[in-house]
Image (cartoon, rainbow, N blue to C red; front, side, top):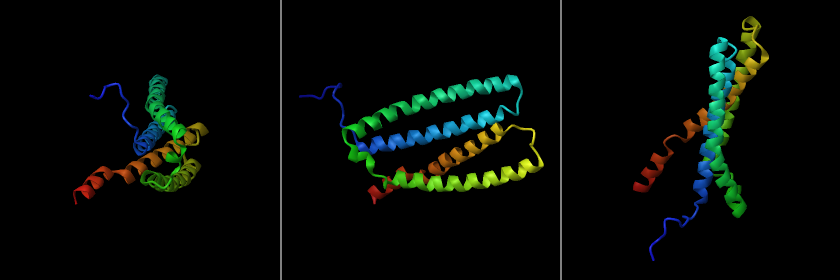
Length: 163
């Protein structure tokens, strides 16, 4: 009997978890962009700030649209088989932990630089400007480090299968 187009394909738990992590880190990168936009709003005219605000609203919507399907599939998988998603020793999880360590170091250095800069200049800017910069650097460096650490993993896997 031929397969129907309406039959569901079996869910590969590893792919669901990988998709969840990849979309989450893309969402983190978009959130960093949003916080950078929030900081820039303090430096530009009201008209430009207004358009940046609209851009930030669009980024927020993109984050929700990007993450909702991945969260839904992940939590549905977790509900059906909790043991699948408990493992935290996978490659992507290890790369996330390494990226978090690098992001912490970058954020710490950034905060030290911001303390030095604000003692000599930029004293007129509100604390919210510096908080947005700090958050943007923190989560932006997390996303960048994660993308850097996980780059070309598909090519390496393909090479291992051929050899």
